[in-house]
Length: 236
Image (cartoon, rainbow, N blue to C red; front, side, top):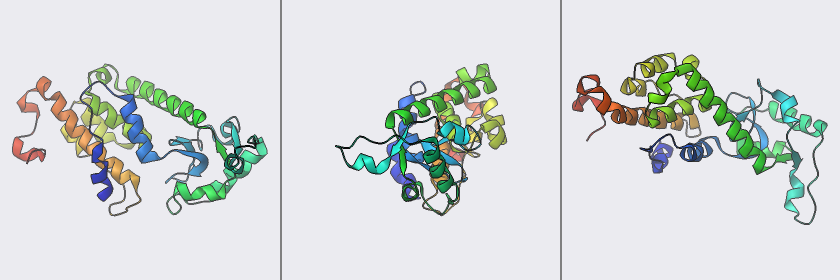
């Protein structure tokens, strides 16, 4: 869990939900890849965890601007724009890989194309906005009342594995009751002992976020709604 310790440089913000902060963490956990790759679920992905498989798929990928990566190594040669057939070839190549065995960084050698950083930023923004709208609809008026750390935790779950209400039903039920300390106990996942499993790191961060949310919410709930000092594990 050394990665979790190193990840401690990111501290939960005490202000309103900070999108720049979330982006910094997402980039650390998801990576930022200009080439197509498969994630841990073997879904074809691009950029900062923007999943194509099962959503827009190959047709969406073929609408994105891709260029031959080798052209970017020679500044005086304009990069060649990839055709839909070129994109389909890269898509098929990474689809054959196992994301659990081949890290995204090393999947680049199986591709010939890269997209632009501007495109990655646009896709990331779309993904964030879609999840914010989805979670706001699902939690209703309570979403506006959640502490910023709870919102960060829920967004992290959405980015990491999917809708909290589907993938983490117990946690989601506790959050609806504003029991953020209880939710913190449900927030971890991943393969214990796997140094390459970013889900384990993400889960540890989420646990901290919901513990922090419990402290943020404490003034509004009173001492009877929060575990005793000796049982929280939050104090030395």
